[in-house]
Length: 209
Image (cartoon, rainbow, N blue to C red; front, side, top):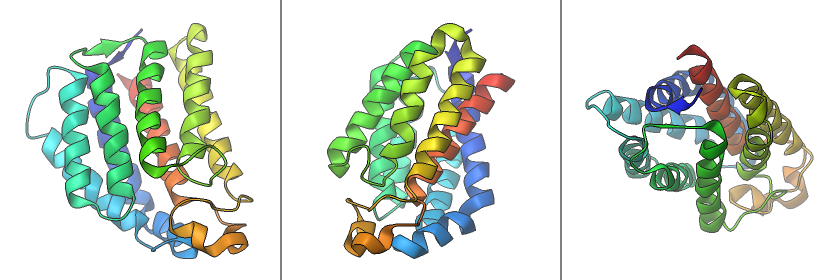
């Protein structure tokens, strides 16, 4: 079974709904170590992405994720817009004109997206950012692909959740949170949290379509 364009569209819909459901929680997380706007910004960005993607038909992943990238970058300020926009843009560029792909290869495309995020944010694993959830999720997805799609996605989500929780004891080294130094310890990173949500949506869309 492959990951299809239909699954990707469904994942964007699910991500929009999950962000809407948790926007206040994300903003609360961000109020402790950031600008208190991550939930609000992501909610606005995903609503606009879904409006865009529902207004046209797509032939390939490249077109879908390019529109997602351009939309979120145009409506979301702060760091979330550029970082998620870069992630979606690089992901779409790697996938190109394909409309379905094996999960192992989708992991490679996700890695391309993450590389863009790390380059833009000058971030690495351990810096208390979205990278801490995405990197282990991609590794788990790739490593478990031979066990079947369901097992691979379940492993990816579990790894993303673990990575998200691992940000709690970290000292932030990038972004607004880094200004707090040791005072950032004890707080879960909001970007890692929304990234965990994204992988749950990829998994759920894969399971339902």
